[in-house]
Length: 250
Image (cartoon, rainbow, N blue to C red; front, side, top):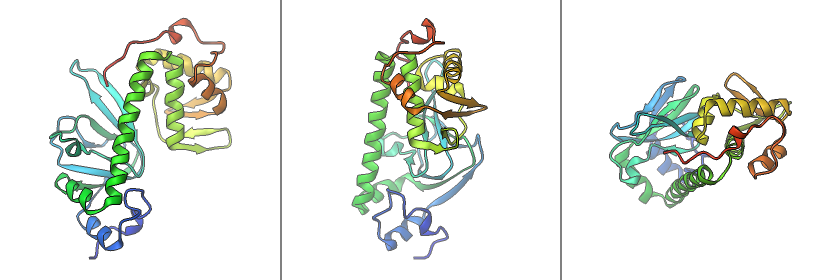
């Protein structure tokens, strides 16, 4: 079956790596490509979950508004990830809003096709379930961190996770290769913009990181790992940055 979307766009993604070409053509024939500019929404919290998606290029962020009206940064979506799978969780609506943080390209399919995807290809099903399981594991890890770890540890772990998933080697270190604000780091780690700004400034003075407008580069990964594991904090961190904060809703 012919398709306007070339197989090469998805053939090397883990979700489709073992799918036969004939089946892949069928899958791509019903795919709906979307090109997004920074700030564009793929879907909004509370909207009917009519599609699920795979990110081909760029980066997205998932934001959730709590019942108290507080906006919380939940996670980032990286290329190759399946997302918007509310129907797979038996949810009729999307539990969060998904926005592009830079120019991005996604493929979407009607949610009614999810069960067909899962039963029609065992490798896709296995990879999709692994993705869901990893997402739940990450959520549990964040809850534990918010409950038990000091703020400096949480911020260090957050930056290391982003470097691990989206790091790009540069002459000075490893950069998070998409725009990220200090406010977003604060929301992901259950602390304040003021605390994150003071931590990053202290780390910059110590040569651990370099920061710019919506950019973070890790200069000394090993030192940041020690901080994430609860090693001794260096000069420049005050008591307010080390104080444990209560769990905040995600």
